[in-house]
Image (cartoon, rainbow, N blue to C red):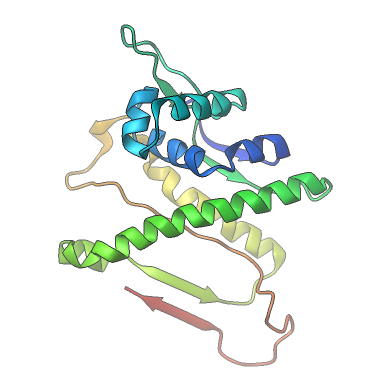
Amino acid sequence: MIDRERDNISDPQRVRAMTHPIRLRLLDYLGTVPDATATECAEHVGESVASCSFHLRMLAKYEFVERAPSRGREKPWRLVARARSSSPDMDDPESVQATSALALAHLEFQIGLIRGWLEQAHREESDWALASVETSSHVLMTREETAALSKAIAELTDAYAGRWEDPSQRPEGARPVRMFAMVFPDQGSNPNPGHGNDGDTEAK
């Protein structure tokens, strides 16, 4: 059973421990199953059992995964927390650097998933394709409002998280759905713009 829904990380050693493409894929896969052995992980992520075993042990060392109850001779792994978020300790340069590196690695991982969806979206049922959205916004907000928006986005999917462990919570027709979002200050715009319309764009 997963101990907690969200793990907030700022320690640079823990952040760096996640910053590896295989580990990101392992964490992603373990978020979709109650537990999995290194062999099952290897089959899913397309890596060797030895490689997955090594990366799972490293993830366990930094408390991202743990041993699940044995299945006979099999020794599966499971997540410690359903979701993870990282925020830098601004007083620690190592934390800032590590968090930036993780964000870039995670962005590359998500781009791969999004590209895969776009390449086959035309084969989806029309209702599912129409329900999917790519959206962006360009608005004026205070630092406090930005932090509140970031927290609200992080909490959006938490309401549905229990459905992985408890099939009875899944409504008919439910299937895995992903959400990826970033909230960040615009580095190229005038921080004190005059009157004008804020830009919002949306494409389905």
